[in-house]
Image 1 (tube, helix red, strand yellow):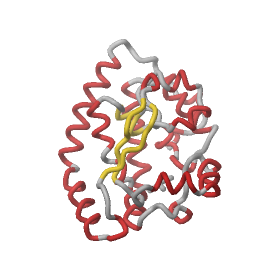
Image 2: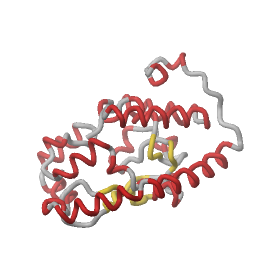
Image 3: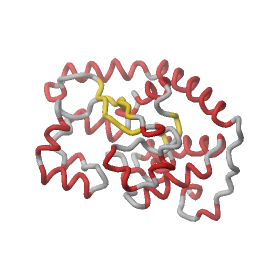
Image 4: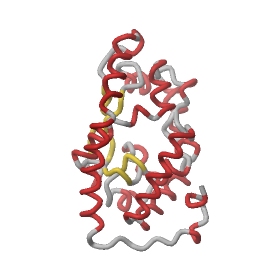
Length: 220
């Protein structure tokens, strides 16, 4: 998708007007409400699968602490794709944690003993991300913005600039390839969005995200 390549000269996006934040928030509320309404059967499906599969027994949702606007911490919702107390297991295994950091704060499912069988499907299909519409509705996230990071990742960014906007459920990094793109390129892409944010750019990013999800690009 040419729009999301590395040639910044091809991108001609105007700076956002004063009305952009208002339009963005209205859009976030309307679209997150519609998404939660129409995707509600998926919540039931995931709940049933949790009840059926012994390896996935536990809470339906997982709240992971992320850094939001102005450095405020919040719990980002996901359908749980890991075993209970997965973070404790990661922290206790120093070798696994070192691999996690070296791989841009991610582990491939085949290398990650924390991920359940259902969890692999939820991640590959990006279904695990659907509960983030709740964060959008609450105002902790926006539909479009930089991917919310954990505290350890802040060192990869101009963090003052990163924390000047709400993190997004969808973003330029995801549309560009998600987990296939690591740091420092990921940080450069996220900063580029902040510099060029406007409703037209947001719409193109949303389309790019749907294309990436459909192709399963960088999902793990």
